[in-house]
Image 1 (tube, rainbow, N blue to C red):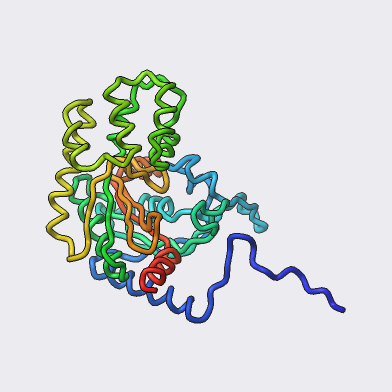
Image 2: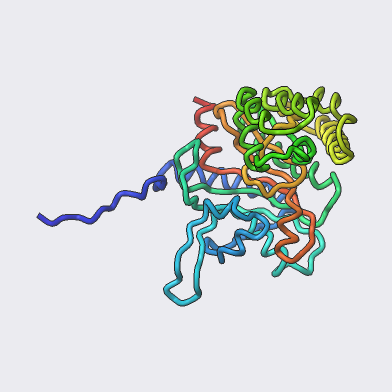
Amino acid sequence: MLELPECKPLPGLADAFGHRARSLRDLQWKLLDLLHQHDYQEVIPPMLERPESLQLGAGHFLSDQTLVLSDPAGAGLMALRPDITPQIARIAATRLCDQDILRLCYSGQVILARPDTCTGSRQQWQTGVELLGIPSLDADIEVIQLAALSMHHAGFDQPVIQIGHMQLLQSLIQNSQTSISTENWLRLLNRRSPEDMQEALVQTKLSSLQQQALLEMASGQADLAWVKHYENQFDEAFQHAASDLQKLIQTIEPTLPQGLSIQPDAAVTPRFLYHTGMVFSGYAQGSSQALLHGGRYDAMMKKHGRDMPATGFSFDLWRWLNAIIKEKS
């Protein structure tokens, strides 16, 4: 009897066909049409990229999720993209370097070297927008409004956008005299465990006020009242970030469609740690995990050779499709 080769998909990867494939395409075009209406130009980067290009400005945050292979045609090492944002940064710094302001959108597959901790999948259909060239709060307001509108347009019931600022944490942990990295501080906050945070704080020489603020962040208490309470109790950078966060909330809230809400949360953590300013996440019924991530990432553009302010957001279409189906069932 003829033995057939192993034909099952690789672990963490899956085929899509029939109704599921059609549903993804319908949602993709629905959202791209919305982005086009808001003057965002679509960009389609290749699946393969030079490893160093993907890691510029992102460092090891992406290197751990990047599959690298050797090109049989002799071009050297190549990498399967785990995130499209670094490719947008490369394009903005090279092909589109003659344009001062860029509004770009994209939608395509990315492959992770390691399975997503929430879904076990190694493939995502990343879709998002990037607004480059505007350093003011106006750019953050525009992309957060568009993120909220995208969730509403996709059909989520009462979506919520949570907004924070990376500088709030940076100001709190400075002079901590500890080996805990910013990445690990963010992991502590993401776990939302005050017990874990308390254990970590024992290793530091932070003031009692800094420790109290961090414990409240880990306990889910870093709302607008928290921001106002601590606004003038730390350094100037903290004060500036707190002021920006409040201005953003005041500006966006009146513009949101009915059913959408926005919540300040200083403990919001980004999906990838190349963000340096305002950060936000999107939630909705049908999913206990964040469905959308975004924020400001000015430093990445500088690493690509163009000192250009940048902000944006992205999401996985597969996760959105699953959450919408679950929400409606």
